[in-house]
Length: 106
Image 1 (cartoon, rainbow, N blue to C red):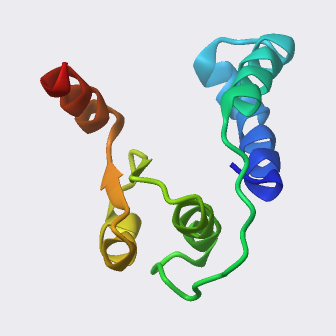
Image 2 (cartoon, helix red, strand yellow):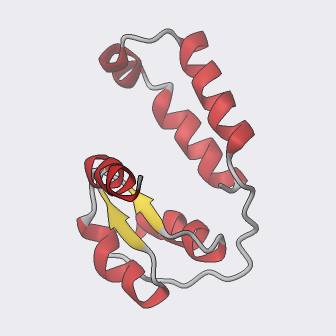
């Protein structure tokens, strides 16, 4: 994770509609975000490979994944990441697909 991506996640997660949907308070959500940030590997985005995705907002995520040598991006919106990540060997998986692959490996 890089600083810009952490800020974006925090901004989105703390929006009223997302807090309402999750049933979590601001402080509960902040604890989750703090925990994710604490365990995330920091990534320095040295190279920006743009444009990559049909959705320009997704390029920031692709930049972090590519520069961080990620195996996959986990998202419910895989369509913008499938083709863009392929040349860099970055897969796009839904959360369900990730969990299934983890179960199959163990």
